[in-house]
Amino acid sequence: MKLNDLERAMAAGELGAAAQAAIEHQVKVGEFFGAADFVEVTQAHVMADTESLGQAGVAWLEGLGAKQGRVRVPTITDPRGTDFAKAGVLKQPGHVAGLERRAIEAFRALGVLMTDTCINYQTIQAPARGERVAFGDTGVVIYANSVCGARSNFEGGPSAVAAGLTGRTPRYGFHLDACRRATLRLRAAFQPATLNEWGALGGLVGRVAGNYWAVPYLEGLETAPGSDALKHFGAAMASFGSIAMYHLAGVTPEASESGGSALKEFRKIEKSDIDALQSAYAGRQEVDVVVFSAPQLSLYELLELAALCDGRRFVRPLLAVTSPQVKPDSDRFGLTKKIEDAGGHVLSGMCFYQSYAREIAEANGWKRLATNSVKLVNILGGYGYVPLLASMERCVEAAEKGRLR
Amino acid sequence: MTVLAARHGIGRKVRGEALVALDGFSARYDLDRIRGVFSRASHKLAGQSYAGKVLVLDTAKGGVATAWMLHEMASRGLVPLAIVLNSVNPILVQGAAFGDVSMLVGFEGDVTAQVPHGATVEIDPAARTLTLLARG
Image (cartoon, rainbow over all chains, first blue to last red):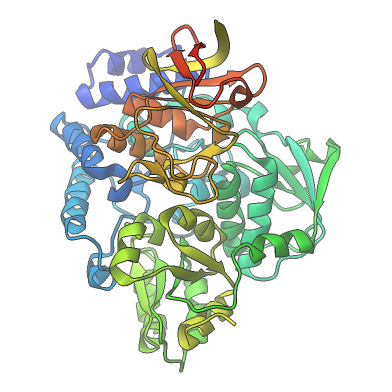
């Protein structure tokens, strides 16, 4: 890779050992992908849960701090592994809180802002078109690339920390014009209505597209979806297909110049395809827990959820997970009270699957989990759950009745 | 001796037993990292131990957690020896670089159809080659 004077100084250790370690890691990754040089980024976003970091990752972060590491651009975090105020509800292993506190201290020592959110494009600052960023959550990256027209690859935790420390990232993948062009053209012959249907459509597109370098171009949608619909659509697509960018004809900013409309139509996605995906996670059966998470809920999702909870009494735990930026508004506007008066819990700063999901399943006897998140049902199979997919309304009913209709 | 050429490589030269399947890979989605086995019931390697093995699979799946997790798995000695894929996303490459796991990516044809399950293979990322030393 071609390095400029500043980057050569970092590589030589002239800006400290932490920056040196960071740029060495970035050069390894950049050379793997044939990056010619670096691009400067305006912000970084780091996956920060200790289930992923483990003791070894936290010790690595602490080591960077000991080397006087300090981020050069605003660097924020994805959800943590717990909500300290609700740790008792989750029954997480005893060591979790201590490791989480160590991680928080280590990130803070580097100058990282502990935003603890996977919806930073709704709550912190959405990137602008053409802005180069280093984002570390697949749902965040696909939203930034596709909806905002910003530029990011999937930046895993170590690479996002490195980008924060150096203020740059290797120029490959979705920083290149050529990688942002559509590679397959799909047509939706179905109009999603609920968030789980938007997720199912995204999951199907992801499954068809199939790998990181595919950029689906989707046409046939009759109305422009809102931010929450696109959030579930993109998060599910990234989860099912490891997809980092899509184009929606007439909606997303780069769709018209993506070349997608000139491609041969690959296939139609019918209502029956959506039903088939959802039926893989369906059942009229007992549920042990109801979870709204992945991605964290926006204020408007909590508004809808609170209205559905109002006046009910739950016989199964209902967990609604949001960001630390949304939670105070949910409290102020009485949404948290409505959900918790019904027996639910509003948690913040974490995400269900990043919070030791296997261990809390065993501690609580949770097996059959109902959710409206297509991303969550895709992930939780590996954690030993039987995930059930339904609309928000049916999930709330399940918390009240103990079973899905 | 069969030698397969890859387009991309990272890490050290290693030798080991190959676990082969036309399926994807994500540390979060597919593994019980405590026990060191594939845990997703629908995965073609479900129930098999991955520790010290050369995983020969199709592509990277899912989210960003694998970038941290390979390093964490290596710290406990429950990590694949190497990962060989037809195609990859940045997360697995970042994770391999951070966790010091050898990796080869991109072959002429489907690599999972060219390496027998259980074969002994040598992975040489610098030379970008997979050498079939013995069939399983």
